[in-house]
Image (tube, rainbow, N blue to C red):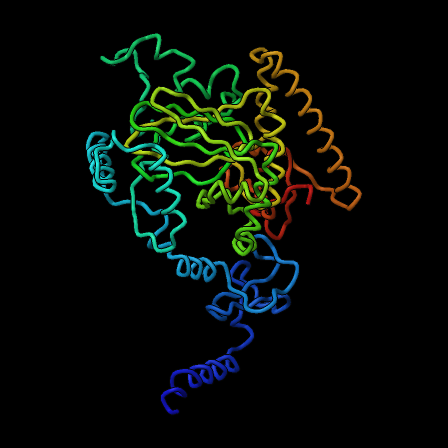
Length: 435
């Protein structure tokens, strides 16, 4: 009885004694630093260290949660512990390879795993084993994936310089060369002032068997194009954009507790659900096997995932033709709802394109004129509304001279460009007028 008391009751009694002694001025919100206990949630995991006002959480809470509540830090810690994320999830490898040495490592792993030479292993057998491993909670297989490798650092699979001994001039300047794709005259990304890694500047991917990419859409719901330079096939699974809402609903039904604490879960690229489970929810899923020499194009808001059958080398980049603009504007609205910062300002892109009318195609002229007119009308309406509320003092401000994180809305995290609302008490904090 004495041992059980020391183990279970004594620690709790000490906690109660400590809690009674804690002065109210020691309980401060970790976000704003204020000690006002109104609407202050206290973490059940780290006690007063994890106190937050409901309005300071991201996303904010409008009600007091039932049962235990954990602060963001404790939630992530518990989730990793329960799901063994530290052991089984994505983590940065300490190993360094050349393309050749990684290929030897990947081929050796695959042949040993399946007990036969790589070229004798059927695609269907690899696919079946991949999903068996994904569905096995006791799986201890670990593979490596050279993902998101910036071509500016690691080099491109396409020729980039006519002076290179391997370069052929027609390939260096070819529009199919992914180094030229994003900045093609038919892609709006060429009008952005900075080279956005992964969007304007291609990324390379060096895979081995079972290495994968989880369900996701492209940033700003843009188009993407992926070229498999060499190696074994890459299997893709895709959901059409017309079923994107059904896909998201199915994912929420499968893991509702994760979406409750992380509304932007699908943007983390850490969630992989078998196609059979999605199909059971009525979500259409299509599959293709990309072979060496194949291009694969994904469309706006088309969720996709996949895995590699063995050693391969691919390269990808985004592009935004005139048909993308409607999806691009809608993506900004959704990002604001889940408090996800965009990669660039859609409004800034429109304005920069409007300053380059002489270079725009007819398709771009039509869509930019249409969206810019809507943007201006919305801006005038919001400013009139603020004037009616009593806002009088205004000043001009050039947002594009600031770093992206410094012109972020404090509430929805959107990138500000046309205007912002601030207060004398904290001029560093900006808010979108719509709030």
